[in-house]
Length: 298
Image (cartoon, rainbow, N blue to C red):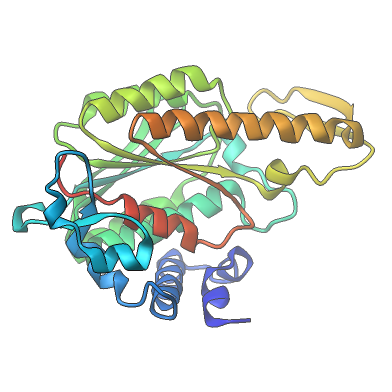
């Protein structure tokens, strides 16, 4: 197993029980991967650049970064170097589901959030934490001091997914809370009606915030590895359904692909970053999306 795999595979991370060490392992593996790839040196350069957006001067494009990433970036001005981030965690009972992976969707989300918090604070960016089910349950104000990392990780480590959720209402509540343009990172399985959720995401984005949606499913939800007659349970209502999984698989996977594609398309059209993940995936993809989505001012 390579060094990157050793640090970034969920089943390996699960063997580390302390969340602060999990965060360090993930970030260390990610940066090692950047160092060993065509992204070499980019882990430092990311903190000095942001994505090119319409209205920027094309003369400010850094063509060396373009050569490495095939994406347009411009140098940030001195006043642009910091951004306030919020980790927004879905506490619904469905997030506690796992089929055969040892990490639940919630565990996976917590590891990602911890790694992102670690990275932001080490870049001297203030980061806060918001948790929600049917409404916001916990709120830690954003800070950039090193001691704040322990506060965030301590709360993350104590969280347990339980009960029902209302993602849309919680995102609307978050939009009403935030007074300054921020980076909002949402961690959820989004197992609810997409219409109100998308409207709430638009509200956040149009309020001047940058938004990244980490759509996290269990491996079984992503690939549906079931055969024969199975009984499935809806985690938030406890409703049970018996079905022939073999005949159902094609329809299920087509419906899931359509569901994800709608989020991808509509988020893209509204300037929102959408990152589909499942609990079998290495953590580096999500961290790359965070870095490439990072903007300084809005």
